[in-house]
Image 1 (cartoon, rainbow, N blue to C red):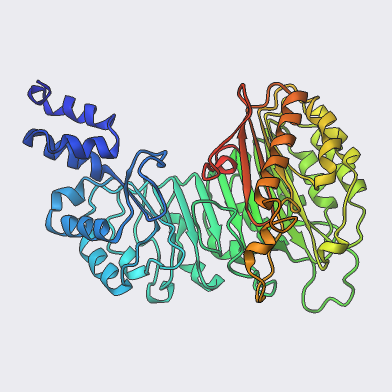
Image 2: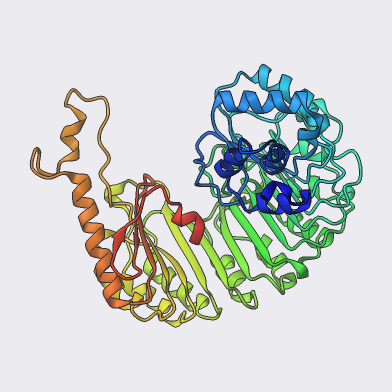
Length: 505
């Protein structure tokens, strides 16, 4: 009976089906073959690490080499299938030779006549500028890609793109390549991402490209003779100067900005001719842009400088009118008084109606044995954040007990993320002793991993006993190993593949 319905109704039914269900329906009746193909081709994600049931955006997942080859051959042979693609996302590719991949893309890209979103987040294989220019771009609303062959093209955006709302340019080799991004062709852009590093599924990827403090002027290369009305902006893996701040103020209407992220960036305080490098300048990058940020509700700050001077960062946070989400990362020198700094930071945070807070830090030029610590009493100011729902804290194992009194006084806290560098023990390499030996705290007596799990479980139960509103708790170490727990009712361990940190923080 279903096959007697009009085509429009059948398409709506297929829109609610998963990938496997749509495939199974296509063999039930010949009437369902084309609706199933339209459903499966509308949004495609190529990701060899993604499972069929682990795809929140509902797109068709292509994982294996055979499936990718079959998809490419279908799109080459059938123009109608290629023209039905609205969203195309490449996250990680199967082991297909690059020359074969490019040969397919040369034939497929010109056929994507209705493409609205293009994301190329593959780290080990770049999208060349020549291939990119084969894409029909008139309908694009989202463009995010890592580029390799910038040198072979004159301009990245050759014509006006009136529908483009999000632009993410990443993986460029040097600032000269940014000259080829003509933002005047994107008058309606709302989100701009400039990242010298590769763009993956998360902006906070490990640093693959070292920041060159001698290379400056990135924003001046991109923002020239434009006036953008952005609502979100991400600056990642670049150096920032006062000239960049002035250029940003003149070319972007910062009063409209709602989300601002400055990730793994370095502010240059001194030029090559400066002899005295002990006194910070009177005006900083943050000082210039702060008066123009009236509507920022989500802020990420990971901005360092030569002096490890963060007074301007504290002042900047205090001047933002009303923050709801804040993510902070600090880099300190060895032997600094962290407790004093955190007390002042908590005082600044108490002025905002924060619902989400994540902060972490690292100590430069120090070993684990001499690692600086701080007193948990320095974090007592967190008790003033009564609206807090999401919280990520860096704690050592011996600080867990002292944090219970703080967590108990946060009435709306639902998601707690504890970063514990000492949770796991690294096993030494290049040794004649079998590696299994190092997984036992007492050889052949106690499994170390199980011991850590039991320890995390006990901590989780203690947190839950002092705050009944907690829904999820996650313990993470420096090697990205983690234990995730659900606290809704009975405390239980969740599958560690569940990306709680990405979903909630």
